[in-house]
Image (cartoon, rainbow, N blue to C red; front, side, top):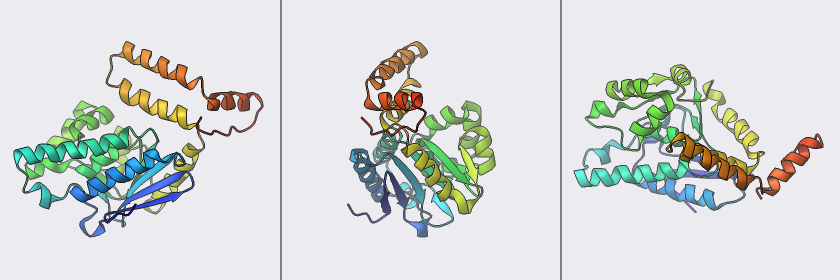
Length: 260
């Protein structure tokens, strides 16, 4: 599978997707969204891949937003379809069933912030800037930013970020829970790969069910979500990985998980 706007690399159980449009700060256009969709579906089908890292090319930007040239000519109907397309791709990332780590190496604005929020975990460079500045263009977030941001940081802070359009630095993003870790810019990919290696050694089925339980459960009433969790717990209790994990613990050795 070849791409014009992405670089997809596999290294054992870890895959890395790099948005590769550095001349426009890795802005997302229609082609990039489609290639991202294809790449994510390919990795979803690849049983050898257990963790995905998502980052941007160059040192300045993760993804600086959607392509303004495309946004400027949107019609009401086209705008709705454009937003739904982005939402669909980001939903695939959020519900991949494998951890996706956003290595936020610079600007993550607009669609870039929305892309990072769709990932399972976020590691930010200390120089990163994150935000939803669409209001300054007379627009609003369209790739589910109005939904994911308040779920991550709370309604009040999300409203402030979206209504003012002002970006925040990495330390503030860490403080409010928008990112999980902040590291020196030169260490972002190293930190992401170290975390990916740790996750890749974990039980894939249990990991998939945890991601599923959290994502689906947050949309359910609490009691219903607990029932859903119990169902998934019952399923994971039937796996070879569960038997291996509990046996390894009792035998005081490291477990080897096969994803079965």
